[in-house]
Image (cartoon, helix red, strand yellow):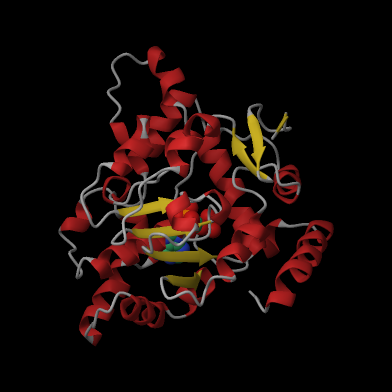
Length: 311
Ligand code: A3P
């Protein structure tokens, strides 16, 4: 366990080689001992790889396209297990006595734990830090992992940190932090590989953002089969429509607009932007310098090609 001060922000630690906010220490034990249920549904991912998109798709499939129920905020019906590790509102809250924050923000692990079955759970934790019962296979909930190409993930993460965490550096500096494994949940490559290597487990479904972009209905069909659901072509069409970039961008249940507003106020962040931002493949071409591209490509070739993982 090593403490370090990043160029970005103090207060990170490395736990089993993974970069995490130091507040993780307060939750490590409850997460390790979190009681997993066989009928849980977990969406796991590295940040900015299409998690929200995947969550909405999986929730709708598992709930027989309950579009009415999907009007409840995704953060409530599909909580982010370690959210409270990332954002310590308990220290900010005294400055805003009028704010009444719900438990899902103040103690996301407790909120998640107490949900009725079947629980839908989002996490960015790497496989090595998932609850013990899940790691050891003692419980076998459905796990859907979504991965996205590393360069686009980095670009998306950069805009996310500007909008949500007050990052003020330029993209080149950010990509150095990403490559240097100094962003929460880094290193990206090992995160993806740990799930890729479990992709043939019967309770694991491995998806790629790029496949969702190329042919969403095919991914919907594959995901429905994973949940033993049969969907008519009209239903697949309706879900494809519900999940379109334009619809998700304007859907307050999934676009985190209220969260961004609250976050900006509490952290005095003055950056405009949206969570569901541009939704493109290969946007890195517009953002990355040649030398950064080269570093990404070398690392990706080294880590992924030998494992037959290509983006
Ligand atoms: P960009 O920043 O490249 O636009 P996550 O949910 O893991 O944080 O991922 C967010 C990324 O998924 C953002 O990428 C966001 O725009 C993209 N995204 C969300 N919904 C989408 C959709 N319906 N179609 C395409 N991309 C989507």
